[in-house]
Image (cartoon, rainbow, N blue to C red):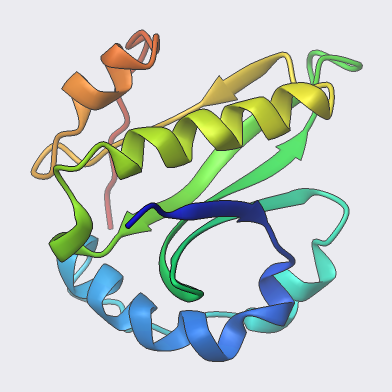
Length: 146
């Protein structure tokens, strides 16, 4: 079994994606005051600034990584991809497929003129080893407050 990677429009895969987002949300959500309530219409409208890479096994969606792609306000003309979310179903982890999915997404972003990719991971679900193996370096910390 080998997964297949592709760039797909998020609006075309909502029916497949929606059930998987429940498991994703349960795994990564640390904001217990928020419910899962995805604004699918916003994703659909972001067609020109959103890159959605899928991972499929025998045609079945098992993972994804999505990026908003645009230049920062202070660096006009410098195209940056900002990771929105990523997920690979737990039963498919540990096989190198997640890394391969990121590598595929990086090639797609680079071919589209992206100069920098911004990635993040949760402190309680730390993917630093994976991100470092892909060549990413940590450069800031984020904080939140209600």
